[in-house]
Image 1 (cartoon, rainbow, N blue to C red):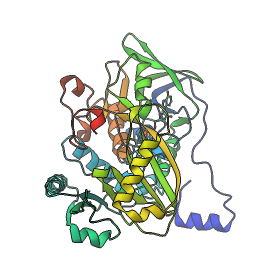
Image 2: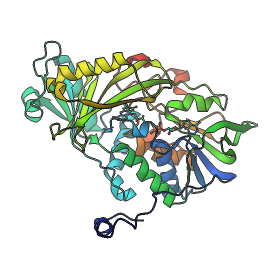
Image 3: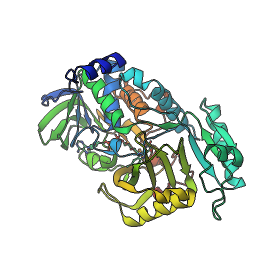
Image 4: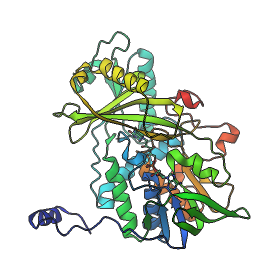
Length: 417
Ligand SMILES: Cc1cc2nc3c(=O)[nH]c(=O)nc-3n(C[C@H](O)[C@H](O)[C@H](O)COP(=O)(O)OP(=O)(O)OC[C@H]3O[C@@H](n4cnc5c(N)ncnc54)[C@H](O)[C@@H]3O)c2cc1C
């Protein structure tokens, strides 16, 4: 089933009777070449690129809930390539390029909107840091523009420029950054993988990983055992639990991150705005809701909901930055389970068990990584070689202590990034 303007018009005029389900609902087969544990953004994009780029279609994605029910459908949808260090920078550049061709590639409207991201700064020192980051972004082929206070005011006049504690000095502007509709990304990849023959099996929790003589042989699920030559663990916030089924202890802690959306308002915010000092970021959805979030809840948990002190903190930060937000009514809030790695960078690697692979450590920024993560992980699974854009996301970096401390440059402590 291909989507086109003509098709939408025809269906609109004929009662929308011609649409078919986006993917099949197959029963699990007893054996696959490759089983992916986790039907979130990363598991689905991995399946898609395995089929598209490597012709591997005897593949199953096993999802304990429903497609789009995890973090892929819970994030604040920010897409960017503004990293500083090698390791991350080439990977996120690769991801942004894939985003830019994604809708044509998937024949699916993921509502990718390059509305630009404004990272605010509040002092001369922060301006220097922003300039350094901008130069690094330019040198790796991405885009960045340093805006002064008045240039920033011209774009977002409604911000509080003279806050006593955090006066606005300007922003690092990343024009190719923006947003995409999160669950449409899951649906688009799911549809693309399914149409190439991958089995997407929902309500199929994996309860065990079978290992024989140092080699993976399959998985146990609530719908029975499934044999597999290779198994890929792509379970985001539940990665530690899944890896424990193979006797592994990952350097991952699971923490809650909350998000909020207001009632629909007339268009007011044209960009994504991030207020790092208040740990607050905001954009406006196509339906008009202000979508915003803040920091982690700062305790490890598997509950997909958060606590009130964090809600209060986020609201305070929002009010400090843009007092007009106080008039809006919050419609909903929710939480997701973040797979926090010690250095804030992901893990995409083999494990010490033959045929068992891991993809995790997405922290609070794994949505924008979905295209590249699937693309490079499929490469690793199919060829057993690291993709050139992802050579440093190795599990053994935690043994040597040589992490990729990028996101905020705050050190290898989960509670600082
Ligand atoms: C509030 C919030 C805001 C965020 N904002 C952003 C943002 O603006 N930009 C950005 O880039 N990132 C953001 N993120 C992070 C991003 O959403 C995640 O890093 C990313 O979605 C994680 O990868 P995933 O999509 O594969 O995860 P998920 O969708 O969680 O997929 C993992 C899947 O594994 C399944 N699973 C777990 N255990 C098992 C099992 N035993 N058997 C079978 N299946 C299993 C789960 O049910 C789940 O569906 C945010 C996250 C949250 C929660």
